[in-house]
Figure (spheres, rainbow, N blue to C red):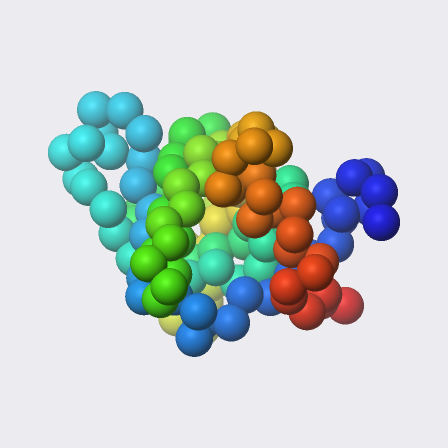
Amino acid sequence: MGHSDRRHTRYALPDILFVSQEIKRLGIIGSVLGWGPCHIKDISYAGMLLTTTKRMTIGDKITVKLNFKTGVELLFTCNVVNASTDHGSGDLKVGVSIVEPGGDTPEGAFLSGLGDKFKALP
């Protein structure tokens, strides 16, 4: 599978893998407001769809932190490209583009291996 194919294939991450999934805005506002919970609905090499109670707007720069039960912590820098309300839960549904991490980082290795570890969504 080539790099361009992976960018559009979305994968489901089972909740059982995580201790927590958190989100924080970058900058002064993010420093004041701190981390908040989020739930990643799907992920691809290029982006994520997640829900959160934290208020985000299009154009915000954010950090998404994944704390795995194995003790591994991954930090992804992202840009909010879509934000709407999930009417079922009242949470904010946020689409983000991932700032591409270097291939030699744990985050880069995780994204490159998505297809080998997780189930692709239709």
